[in-house]
Image 1 (cartoon, rainbow, N blue to C red):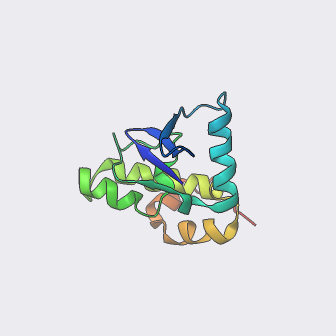
Image 2: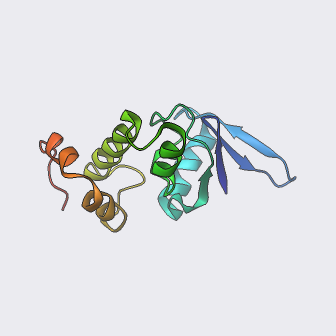
Length: 127
C-alpha cells in the first residue's frame, strides 16, 4: 500500500516503518510503484491532500478522490479542477498509466465534459 503525502510517495516497510520514494524514473522504487499500479490499479494508493493541486508524477490526480481533494481545497470553479480533468482525459486517450486498459479509461473518457473533449479533439480515438 502506498500513500501520497505532500507530493511524496510513501510505502510501509516490513519493520512497521515507512520509506519515502522520490518520483523519479531513475529510482528503482518509483519504477516498482509504477509497475504495482499497472498490476493492481490505483486502489493501492491513497491520498488525503492534493498539495498544490497540480498534476505530478506521484499520480495522485488519478485517484478516485482526486477531484474531491481539489474541490475541498480550491473550490469547484477552480482552474485546477479543469487542469485535473484535462490531464486525466489526455492520459486516458493516450493509454498511459494508469489508463492502459480501456476498462479503466472508458469511464474517464465518457465522463469528461464536452468542452474538454472539444479542446483535445486532435487526439486520436482509442480502440
